[in-house]
Structures are given as C-alpha cells and as structure tokens.
Image 1 (cartoon, rainbow, N blue to C red):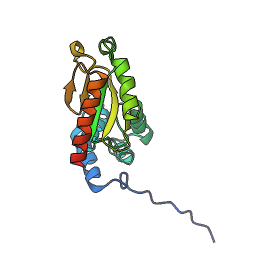
Image 2 (tube, helix red, strand yellow):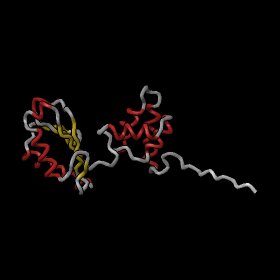
Image 3 (cartoon, rainbow, N blue to C red):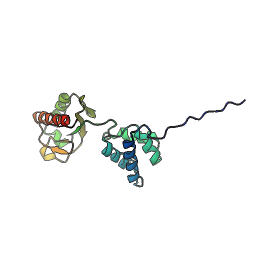
Length: 176
C-alpha cells in the first residue's frame, strides 16, 4: 500500500486580520491596484486607514498585488514612515532637518526622548504618544519644529515641549 502525501491547507492570506482591517486592506488594494508601483500607495492607504500596517496584512497585500511576502515586508521595514504596530493616541513628529538642527532641534530631540522615555518609532507605556522623526516640516523659519498629529508647532523649546505633551496626554486620557 502506497503512502499518500498530505498537502497542508494554507490559510487564506489575511485571515488573521479583523474583518474591518481586512476590508480596509482590500479597499486600499482595489483603489490602487492599477497604479504603476502600486505597493507604496497601497501601504500608505492601509496606514492611513488603520494607523499602521499590521503584520498580518502583508500576506494579503502580497497576494493581491502578485508580489512575494518578502517584497512587501522589505518595503514596510525599509521605510521608517510605515509603522508595524498601532501608534499612540497622538503621534509627535520631530523635525531633524538642518535648519531646525541649527536652532536647537538636537537638544529638543534629546529632551523629548528623555522626558517621554521612548526612542523614535516607540510609544509611551500609557499609549498616549508615539515619537517619530521627520526630515522637514517646511517650517524652517520657526524651528525647531514639531507636529502633533496634524498640528504644526514652531519655536519649540524643551519647556514648551513639556507643555504640549502634558496637553496631549490630557487629550489622550479624554479620548481613551
């Protein structure tokens, strides 16, 4: 009697995603599938919809765009813009461009990391604030600059940073 080989059944790509997440990924793919170089627009759309690119979205995006999982993961992990974990309730982008550096951004960066207790691409333990670097906010005349969510702030000193973060934490608690 011959032994039969058993072929394992592969789960559907993206089956570990929540239904709303899967729908957001499919909508992003459907919207950008025909765009030349569709992967980056799809990843941006997924992050815009979900706040990050869940690791379980990678197989679904790869399948839908006829790419390998390694290709999609490589792009997600290469570009610091793409988050692989959910962000805090507020995302703080600190400008690291030369104009801001010339007026104190390096000291502000050190203060921000120390006062929040996180490094870039990390979220405070209370889930309130994610710290991200950015290489220009276009606010060069008012550096050092940062952006909290979509609100641009200029001439930010360490003291003003602390005030802004205290306000962001209050907002985060209120929305939790």
